[in-house]
Image 1 (cartoon, rainbow, N blue to C red):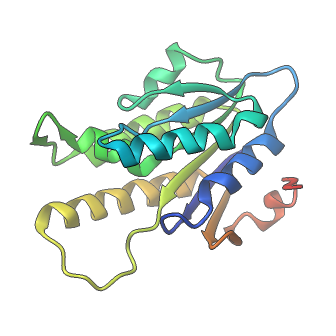
Image 2: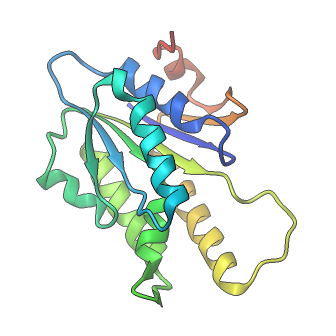
Length: 185
């Protein structure tokens, strides 16, 4: 099953995605947390440590991969259950490399994600919903937002379930019948 989780920053997406991925986990198959965040400062490091502490009881095998997500096929058993957190960070990592801006990074991320999720048995992807404000941004930020929207749109097409998380509330936009298979208790 492919589940796409989107929502605003710090709205509970990761904890809901953890519960969903745990409910999809199969006893004899691996259980992976794919961490894509590349820490830039102490705030990022604290956030990563908090996430690790919060998910200790779930017994994920954590794989840190900031670029080239399709390389998971060389690292992991694709019959396992995966939580990829987050698509947003993955795009930033591919778009901003060594003080350069890779304009078509969103195309690579989309291609890599579609490739790897097509080979996975169960995967939950987390992405930030950053499209609803009315602030005028610079060209680079707008390019990033458009790139993330492109990735989201293409991955959601392949997803069985699309949910939006808003302050820990789940709104199902696609796949209500499949979502019923998920046990969030």
